[in-house]
Length: 222
Image (cartoon, rainbow, N blue to C red; front, top):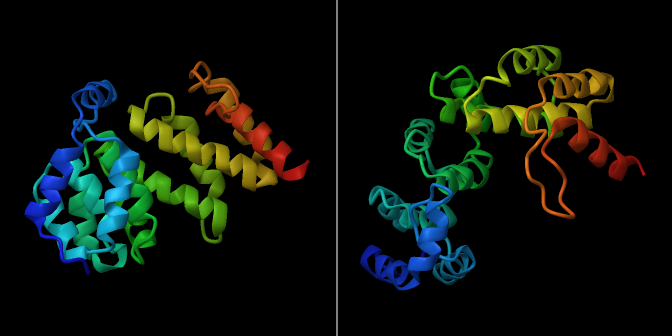
């Protein structure tokens, strides 16, 4: 545990604030003005401190919560705490880091996946699909993959943006990791055309499922 107080951490965060960075981040829905590399450097200097992370999260400030997610110990949160935290992660970057740095690393991951899967809040359901993708990749035993494809085929096109992105990720990974379902996964992507026009930088893989599946399979099998 570090010796840094919450007031000292907040002062460090304030020193990282950059108005130009805030303006750029706000265009993406993130209300903070910090360079994330500098934020990570601060977290590395403080080191893991779950008590401090709890205090920072409680402020409700986006920058403080991002730092909290870098300092916390995922296994120290209860299932109910994880549920409450997820429902507060409205800023896209806070949501992304919570799902990837905490929800995917907690011993409650499968319990939370099942708990969140049919939630009416699309942000919560999106986290369940992100955890489902981990299962698809690493341990699909017990998952009804054809049923997941049924749900994706039915709901993907009309899903809210964050939920749509997570469902599409599951679709692509079913196609990548489960050859017996690859043709169906590709066909769903082709017919629905979700993210077909998503701008993709040179050297990056398109999130359009058929292209994504084909490219990763080529790399894995080539």
